[in-house]
Length: 114
Image 1: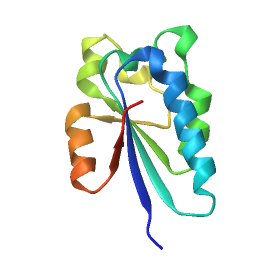
Image 2 (image 1 turned 90 degrees about the vertical axis):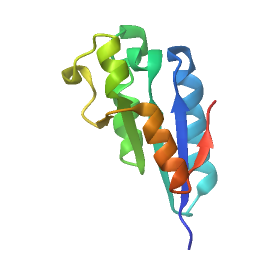
Image 3 (image 1 turned 30 degrees about the vertical axis):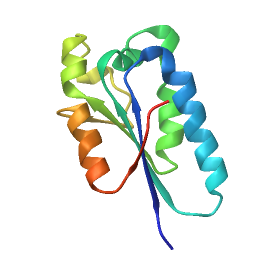
Image 4 (image 1 turned 60 degrees about the vertical axis):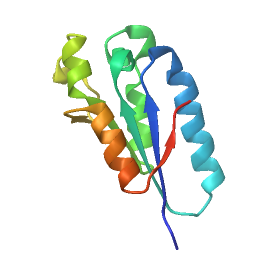
């Protein structure tokens, strides 16, 4: 059985509710089919871990237990003065968010940018 591979790209902090909703809908529609989701977070979207109204720790933890990986761009974190220690435990840090998106697309991931 084939695994469905999808990369969700988010670069705007206001889009977090939409992205998380899209991911949950995708997982629901997949049923028993295998999937792997990678969420690449760059630009201002990294502010979700810093600003109280956007803290997503619980959602990230829950989704990470359902084959969802969250990759935060190290350059965006540095540019927004966010220390790695502020990241939820379930989050990975990648050197470049845009490079990660390209790598995943080259590996056959479908690209979604809500």
